[in-house]
Each structure stands twice: as structure tokens, then as C-alpha cells.
Image 1 (tube, one colour):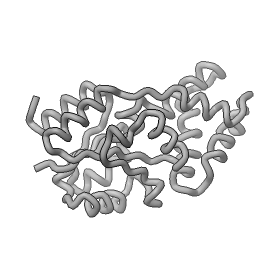
Image 2 (cartoon, rainbow, N blue to C red):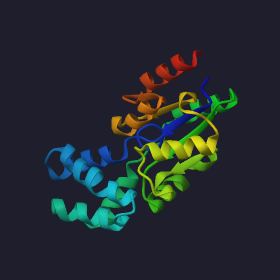
Image 3 (cartoon, one colour):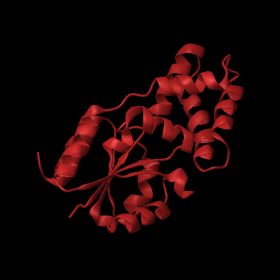
Image 4 (cartoon, one colour):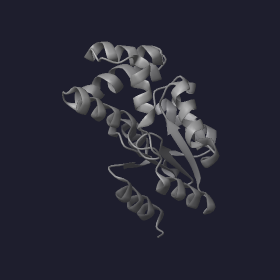
Length: 200
């Protein structure tokens, strides 16, 4: 029986943060958007989310790497400006809560960026349970993170559904016996989760 459903923050509840920023940079300054994404997110912001560099350093390093004619603050503002909330995901979360399921909004981001995002969209009012793995000092894609979540919510692996738009974040969870959903688009995600929970 499913007791806990984990929603990825950036990519499910919010639109794709870093990919959208990377695409905006590619459109304005040229070059493949995936290169911007690889450097900005996978190289620098993964380090920032694991407390190895500061958020400011992640923005500045990206600007320096691509020799962008903007300040790190302007890049940060662009990134924040592109965020949009998925009202369908918010409504689904509300519906699941009414049916008795616990839900968790899970993110891997720097403390300041996640706090800004929560304030802007009122995420802590929409989700009763919110965890940013930065606060745990753990990577999002890890068995340690899942063990901490299971302990906190008093559930075992097969009682969890974990939905994320990045396969790397789901690999360990799947190996532990968690039911996982790789989010490719919202309609397919909702269809899959309703299928697992066996209701319309």
C-alpha cells in the first residue's frame, strides 16, 4: 500500500528551472543549450547544492566560463524570472492529501534559492512536507537521503512513489524497491501515478 508520494520540485511542481535558463542563454548568446546546462547545473550548481561552493560562485563561474556579457546577478534574475508553477501538480497534491496520502516536496538546491522560490510561490503552504537536501548535507540521488525520508515518515521503500524528471535521481530509489516515475511531461506523469494508485 502506498503511503508517501514524493514530488520533485524543479521539473514537476515548477517548470524546468536550469534547462529553461540554459535555453534562454543559448537563444540570446548562441551555442548549444545542453552545454550551458551541463556547465551551469551539472558542474556548478550540483557543487553549490552539496555545499562545496557558494551559490554566488556557481553563478559567477557560469558567467566566467561562457564569458557572458552580464553580471552574475543578472543571470540569477533571468533564472528566477523563468520559473512558473504547475497548477495541475498543486491540485493533484491537494487531491492526494484528501485521499489520505502523505506527500513530500523534495528539492536539491542552495538554501537561499530554495527559500526564495518557496516564498515566491507559497510552496510551504501548498505542501505540508518540504525537504531541501541541502539542509540534510546529502545529495538528492542517494540511498542515505531515501533512508532519512523513510525514517522521518515511518514508511518502507515499497510504500513510496518517487516522481522526478532526472533518471539519476531515481536510480538508487528504484534499487531500494521504491516505485519510481520518470517525469517526461505532466500528462503522462499523472496518468502513470493514477494507474499505480488505481483510481481516476
